[in-house]
Amino acid sequence: MSPSFIVIEGLEGAGKSSAISQLTSFIANKGHDVICTREPGGTPMSEAIRECVKHDWNERVTEETELLLMYAARSQLVENVIKPALESGTWVIGDRHDWSTIAYQGGGRGIQLEKLGALRSMTLGNFTPDLSIYLDVEPSIGLQRARGRGELDRIELAGLGFFERARTSYKELVATHSNAIEINAMQTMDKVQSDLIEKLNEWYARTQADIKVGMG
Ligand SMILES: Nc1ncnc2c1ncn2[C@@H]1O[C@H](COP(=O)(O)OP(=O)(O)OP(=O)(O)O)[C@@H](O)[C@H]1O
Ligand SMILES: [Mg+2]
Image (cartoon, rainbow, N blue to C red; front, side):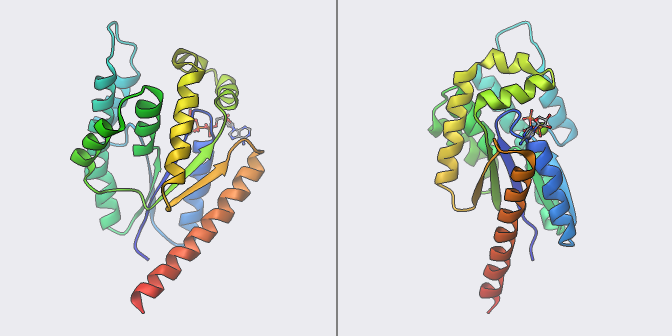
């Protein structure tokens, strides 16, 4: 079975980190080599860009700057880490990828999707994940969880409306992509985990069946 690039997406506090450790065990238990990456970040230069994006600059950071930095970091990660891993037979799990830009910079900040599409095709070409897993939470619930970690400031700064718009974008993306799974992440952790495993098993079996058909 050729290696897949699987991405976990969702708002702050959706439970992405928890889902990633589960997903990693799932793939490893199937006998595959697997690495995890995060965005923005995942290469030395991309991690520096992450710091730069998160830094509290004493000047206005324009939406265009934020957007270009996201794609700069993503390009480094895809070309230097993700593609080489897949080519060497290693599976890749991504903590966020291009949907985050569509949801946050597109839906949240209101940058036109055409502009995002142009940047995407310039930096990524036709490279896309084999599977996107979206963890759906109401922003207020994610906010409550983030409050538990003392990360409220960043969220309060953007405002609930920003995250409502980002959530709408995510839901549209799931609805228009066949290689996407949505999980109700407002349930208990146990239920979220069992839903994830159930859907992963379905996906994995289906992918293997497709390969067999292709070979026949
Ligand atoms: N289903 C759940 N029910 C209750 N609490 C949860 C659930 N899922 C995650 N949490 C808790 O919410 C917090 C955020 O979870 P996690 O760090 O996995 O989210 P995240 O999506 O990775 O967030 P971020 O976008 O900030 O990286 C953690 O303290 C976690 O234990
Ligand atoms: Mg996380």
